[in-house]
Length: 431
Ligand SMILES: [Zn+2]
Image (tube, protein in one colour):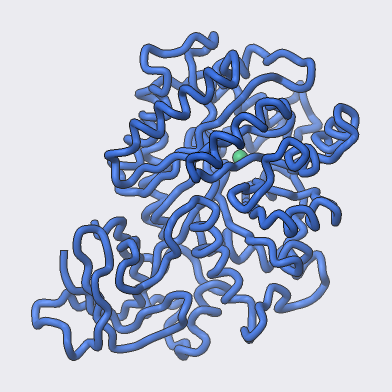
């Protein structure tokens, strides 16, 4: 590719003016004073160049539930997460390789346009509707990865393990296509997925035992062992809904995060998705094991999950990444801002998520959008520096959302007052 000459650079090291960036072979190969750039450098007028945002949790096919689920079913007037889940199962039931590729392409196209350069896709629709594997056992997961490649989005395929409906509860008909008969069968698919992705520069793979509801401790242990041996991330939903915690206590006498830990599956590669109802003991355990959480604020609002205890997570130094989850809303800046908004609403304070040495929450929100996301997905930290992946976004400094803001307030204005409207261009691996 070539030289880029923006007005300024914004990354985890702050705002820098008069710098030029060279991109070659998908990587940033040089950052030099603008005066040293060649005459044919691409001048990016009124532009801040920044690393792209990391979206650590998505279910691409759920994109097509937007609008559809926003009405009361007269048969189920008390609509909640569990009635929504039935609608989602019906949607999952209608997928085939072509359909899931189509919805994923539409979802990822907007995701990229909104400034996300990488997605962690928590993918659980695997088999034919009756549970029979396709001729290619990962046909649907491959179709989703191909959608990301076609739209130019980096993807970490978090291949889901799904065993059962609950402890001693077989899968419902709607869950059959998520399930593998044994953990060995699941691990064989995970291995096949890993090998398939080896020569695909935009695709890597991680494991994703769905939840302690859907996976037994025995499966969790086996999956964690494989995951560690291959240096992969391990993502698992936990503590999204109070019912899950009641079931966990009833089945195991432990809360969900404690069940995951007791199975040996909680360490620095583990990401707890949601953590909405984590209690202090669970948060202490997450901090002690250096596990991360992925909060998905706009989806958690949509589903009536509750407020994640972000202030208590933050105070413990837990790495907090962000996900668009059901993909009803695709705006990484809005998603990040909701972290601080939840903390303010629940604490009755302003400027809550403020790191030592920072003057306000913008640094913590950018860290959630960049470094915590990259750590969650096992990717290099997003930087505008030599050797970093050229996963970049252009932000329009002339947009009225941020026009006229001084450099020292720019990050705060983007994160606390801006939106994905600011993103005018996205590059993934330099393209
Ligand atoms: Zn999810």
